[in-house]
Length: 68
Image 1 (spheres, rainbow, N blue to C red):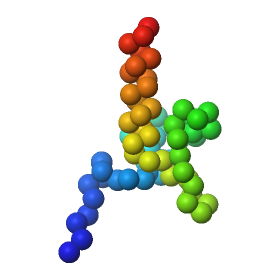
Image 2 (spheres, helix red, strand yellow; image 1 turned 180 degrees about the vertical axis):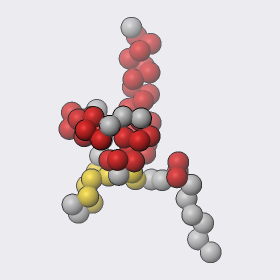
Image 3 (cartoon, one colour; image 1 turned 135 degrees about the horizontal axis):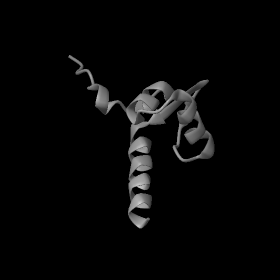
Image 4 (tube, rainbow, N blue to C red; image 1 turned 90 degrees about the vertical axis):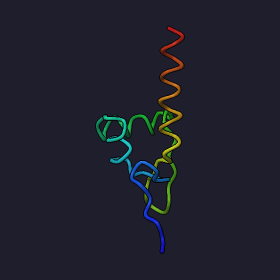
């Protein structure tokens, strides 16, 4: 029997799910994607954000904060 993944362990997230995880709005999430600050992939016509890219983005924010 297949085991269901826990919500926090999903591999790919929709833009809305990624925004919710960062506690930001959908428009701000699209801005981060467009600027290249958060990487995303397309599958057909769908835009998805690998969960690891959110972790990398937050790690970058933390590193930048330590340098200030």
